[in-house]
Length: 294
Image: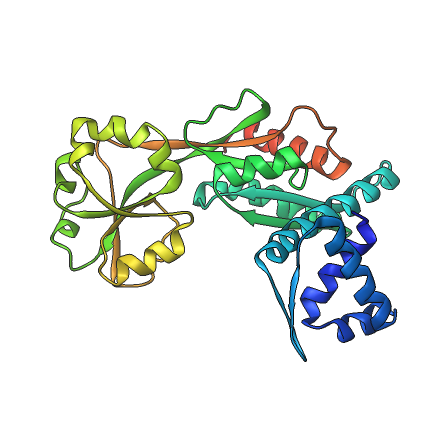
């Protein structure tokens, strides 16, 4: 695949029709249409359902659009960092799940943005599976994974703060009267849990044999939509403290007891040289973590 044609394809999707994309790209509409048809022939798939005024992506088109954005971003990043030498500039791409314990990292990013006006930061939310995939492919320099992960293939740095697990529920639930939640309290209740926690043994170890009696009615990737489901009365969510919108007076959070915590671990690829801005970020973060508290 020609990277130039992938850029054409992305522009067509963003504009919604070929004529508008051709105008923005400063090429003729027939030439652009021919390039896309040649791309479809090369790939052996149909990328668009073509209408009179607008085009609609096929399933294969959606897949290519997602990957084309990652490919072109990686090409741009690679080109930039090869040409930048020692200049502290460019884009720092970091992926992480949701956690209020990430503030030390955010403080470092804020310092870099203040001190180096040419730097840009892209923050990507996602679970550990997606973050590791994108680090492996090179579209993220760093990721923050939470919980017990096999990180033998990555460099890592454990951040100082921990995530504490608890239950997010409506304020009107009888369980909300308790200050902490024990394993037996969850029997007979409808529970939502994160995809990542279901794949790990942390919660299973906390609950012991009772976990097999729990009624898990669903799972979530990031908490916001699960929060809405809790508010609608579908159940309670197993979640980290500090990330739910508790300004909403309908909801409350109660921690688990015995306390159940997860670490936040910054990871990056062992086999890739970090660009200058990423090396600076790592240097400042290590300095902050090791600095004595006042």
